[in-house]
Image 1 (spheres, rainbow, N blue to C red):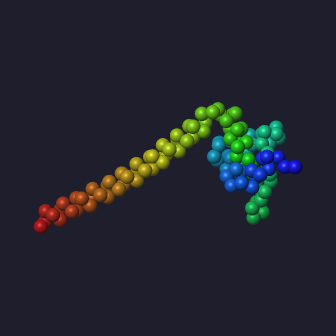
Image 2: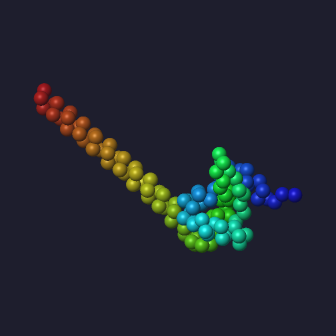
Image 3: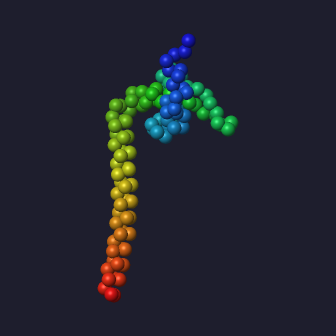
Length: 114
């Protein structure tokens, strides 16, 4: 009989590679290996084009991060992402304003000539 978590391995978004866990959650490779050895993380070895990697369950990695870094980690991460998107949008709008102001000046010059 299979465990309830066995179906998670095939569902989209429920797993991640160790490299994604390193990047997304700021864990070190050693922390991941230590958690696997301690039985805190289930894993499966996989490979793509002959390159092996460790596949982990996302919810277990999130639980590990929550235990190590506290409950506020995910809220802080979400707020930082939103702030970054906001800053990107502001820069884009500033560029658009600059272009529109230049065009406005050109149009005013053309109107003065007439």
